[in-house]
Image (cartoon, rainbow, N blue to C red; front, side):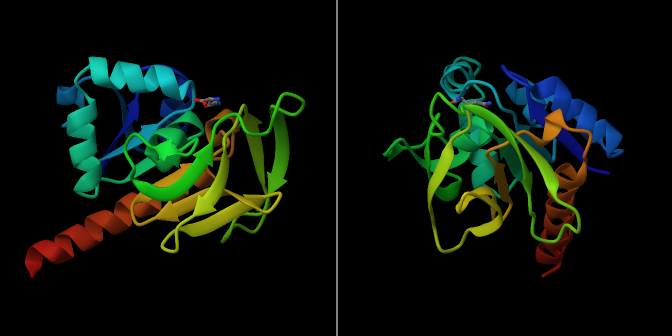
Length: 199
Ligand code: GLN
């Protein structure tokens, strides 16, 4: 069974750990390079992307994490985590540049800066309750990015290879379906990794 890490610098990491446990997988908080080395996949939680950026640099985790992402480790970013994984943020180069999307931070504006919406997610029979908190808007999507859910004609859940991003907070609901979707990506990566090793 894979061990899934949750980046625990700042933000909603405890909720992700709870969700992973609910899904029956081993989960651990990741703050240090030695901890990152023990996990097969990582969730980057919501919070404040600028603080997370600073803490990632300070802790020495940025470089090893960038390398693991480059090597294909599955990652799932929610809200601020999605911002950290984006190729472009507010028209400037992003941090990990792991998924070909351009995001605009805090883009829903003051009046509706936090809201909830029922989302139609590709492959799900019932809608998913999306909790948006000062969420970014995904303004541009590269051609290799698969859109899995939209709100107001903008992607809110998207995937490119082993990188999954949500601009909302699935960890703040009791619904584990999106976490299970990430677990499927991890499983698929493990199968294909083994297949590659055999050839
Ligand atoms: N507004 C935050 C940022 O720009 C993200 C908010 C969140 O993660 N809920 O980093």
